[in-house]
Image (cartoon, rainbow, N blue to C red; front, side):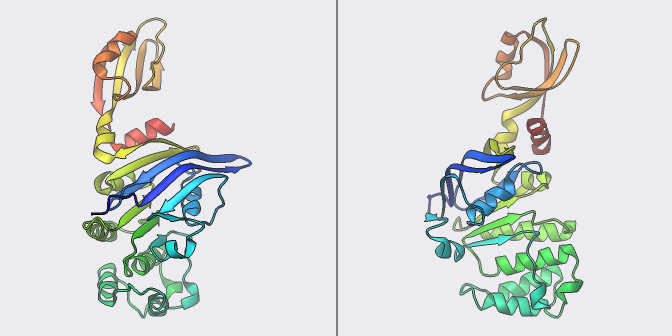
Length: 288
């Protein structure tokens, strides 16, 4: 089993006049589905562009399958595929022509698998790309990426425009391809409930910074919502993200790794009530 990380980012920085990504460290283990979540403008697209060398970096290193993202660009693109809403296939006019063109450049192309995916997703080689819905074009992009079985699959909002049936098919395929721990999927998505169900690990990106990341289940269990009475002069301790305050009643999200609930009373918090959070609720709390 290959234990080396599929994606290894160290000290990444990319600065624009009104936005800065990083410094950012991110390691994506081999053979996992990794969910990257963040509000619009958080830096997700900049990060993905940097991985594929489409956005220059000001500092740091990016390695994909041990390959430098700039020096080994050709070898990297022979191992990694990208799917995003900005891809345009109109030049090929029909689904069949697009499939035949991409197949010619991908030695690992699996005709039977491609046909199976197209059937499951309701695509025909005779379909005119210009008449496909946005969801239909996303289905085509996924077929073209999955069929050659890349070692790394980077997906930017892959389920946009897909109905529940198509989303189930796609995530079933993604779970299947990482089973042997030889391939890895990185998904940037606003569909947080989907990622909570399917992603092995998640990272929360906001304003160019990686706020938290880790095993999905462990990360959700690590944070709890707390409601409590704060004594006069209460100062929020490290680990507490305050959401609301009305008089002496407070509500917030507590990072139990930084401050266990049992120790919360030592910080002048009384009548503490706690409840679990979903990943989406955690995301909203951390990125307000």
